[in-house]
Image: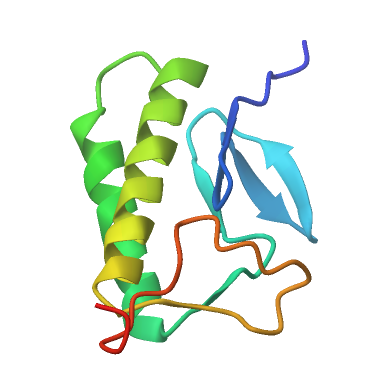
Length: 115
């Protein structure tokens, strides 16, 4: 029987019930894989990535023991989107000017000159 791959896809977050093997997703109901900012819309520092990974781990832990469903994955993905927005508004994260399409999906940049 084939295992079903559950996933959550938001603008900047993709979560899969899978593991990565040889750059392929292999369904695994016991593991969640996070794909962060697949379109490279932001410039990420290691500390910001760690902050997102920490928040992801907290959200997964808070759902431990509950049903693993598309709905719960979407809740986690939406929470991570909110965290990304907060980091952007706090100036810890910035848009990537080399992005394929610069559309300011999380709002216009907030700089001291504009506030």
